[in-house]
Length: 260
Image (tube, rainbow, N blue to C red; front, side):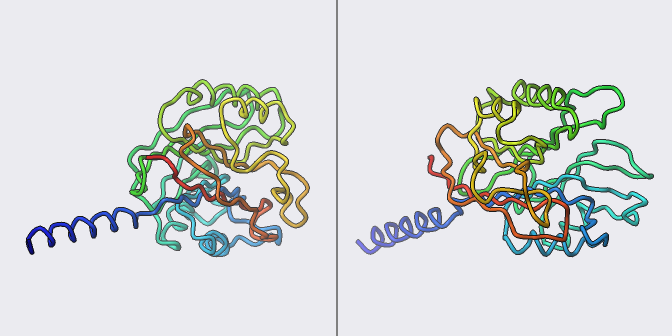
């Protein structure tokens, strides 16, 4: 009898420990403008402090330098990860000033897979990419995070870039989160196209979700979207009120796993 009771108690403890695994995912997206603030100061620790205050699990960064002259040859993704105790992956979009410029993802969880996909563009336009990473949070199945920065000055190109994202991931299985600076207003064609296959954690036109310019935001162009077949529920979304660290404000979405 005592043996059976001990086994039962161990089972209960095991179940409790399983239930203690995180069931929420804090996702932050931030165009950091290579850590140059609106005050003209280059200050990577300031960016780290802004992000760290929100205790994110996954961070999608745009406009990140790696070993460029203008940012003093610092590997910004690696340095941010060091400052925040996270893991980092960088994805090059273009060569720049002896180094590289592109996207980065920071994660509390180990990276299982990292890929880079080139997006359509015209001659002499800046190369744009989608960064794809997969992580395993522990409390629920693997999550694929997509990070991108769409063309800023050409609506036709943005539509083609969104079309490519849909081609790559619109029918992909599993749990996907799409983040980034989409350079597109809520009522624009690219956002309407994404709405056909993605759910918005940051609802287009949502109150309080304006992200640029950071001092007095007037536009919403930074978003968090997801695809999970009803297995995620949006718990919270907000724009962090940071006016100086970058020309964009960061966006946080908290997603709760309600699937099995």
